[in-house]
Amino acid sequence: MPPAIPAPGPPNPDAAAPATPRSRHPGLVMPVLAFCGMVVAVMQTLVVPLLPHVPDLTGASPGAAGWLVTITLLTGAVFTPVLGRVGDMYGKRRVLLASLGVLSVGSVLCAVSSDIGVLITGRALQGAALAVIPLGISIIRDELPADRVLSAIALMSSTLGIGAAVGLPVAAVVMENFDWHTMFWASAALGVLDLLLVLWIVPESPVRARGRFDLPGTLGLAATLVGLLLAITQGSDWGWTSPRTLGLFGASVTVGLLWGWFELRTVSPMVDLRVSARPAVLLTNVAALLIGFAFYANSLVTGQMVQEPTSTGYGLGASIVVSGLCLLPGGLAMVALSPVSARISAARGPRTALALAAVVMAVGYAVRFFTSHSLWLIVAGATVVASGTAIAYSALPALVMRAVPVSETAAANGLNTLMRSVGQACCSAVVAAVLAHVTFVVGGRTAPTLHAYLLIFLIAGGTALAALVATLFLPSDRTGGATGPQRGRVSGTVTVSASVTAARESA
Image (cartoon, rainbow, N blue to C red; front, top):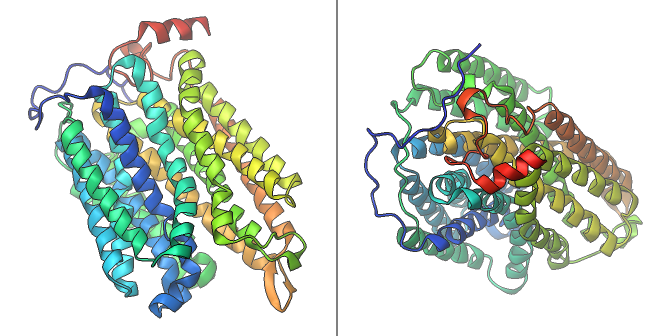
């Protein structure tokens, strides 16, 4: 049995001193980090309304246009855990600034060109900046007082969903009223603004992980993820039994096994598999994958469903802007519910909050299953799902941080964010397959049937219930899954908040 994780102690005495003094504006650290997370999350969905028009605007094939979304998924999946680990070792603020710089460069590339190759390169750089969110969560853990950590990480984690909900309608408005390059110029400007705010407000953390950077482990993880995600995202186009798809799956499994063997034998691994295999961490990551799947189905099908022509018998013939606005109430709900989730986690524990979130998401899909003919009821169902997502995304980092050493916070949250991305990739593949195969011909065109959308709601609701099952097997909130001196810590904070402890004891 692996040894218990030691309780976090004082900062590593061998670590380099902070690059800057502690923040002179501590009250602004959280808003600045949340704004950074929001901007990065918006970038992930910015091109979705643009995709149908990319072939006409750039002369590229529809398959090449799809890479504007696929490439951000790949680079985000690879760089999120890697940059989290680099941040733990060499400075979280330093890596945060580098990620925002990469985001800005990628945005400028997309803004100055209509060449599909340049656009894909720029989108790859934008995707790499997804590491901003786990880095921000780790900085929050290091910088904020214990009684503010839960609410702060709840908001920071929820920026993934909030940004996705805000990005779609904003991009749609830009598409209808301005040149499409405008949204990339705007994202570049926001990236530079984020850089300046972080330089001014956010201090460097003195907490460092010991050891040397694991380059072989990084390359092995990257190869495993790229092979797996390429097979998942391109399998429907290539054919699930095609040599390319099966070859990528096989290569991913082979490299992954070799990578795991190496990581278990290296002194300073890229991913500490012994810690990751503990039930408190493993089941949290499984739940993150399932929640990511359930959340993404809501984003993928809502806009497309309301845009379907009325001749289908269920479509509403809505415009791109209206379809994007359908997700906006969900984004606002996520902002409002982040502090609520933090209070639930403080009073009852993050395990309880995550279980509640999974139930709410399942209820939301039940609403969507039975109310798919009215715009307002579609919006209501989508908002219920988003509300559950807000609670879940707020509880997941709290579950991770109470189970890992303070020096591994960014890497552990990066891995958890990665699992959400893998869940979203699987969801994208399933949704594409269902909408492509459960169809009928209407008005001279092939369109998904209503049953296709209802099937997606059933699958997503079932996935939310599977996340509930995984959550119920997590260690009790009373112990947090920790042993020895780690018991009694509050969701990864270094010191114990008396008020939160009292609330847990009374729970």
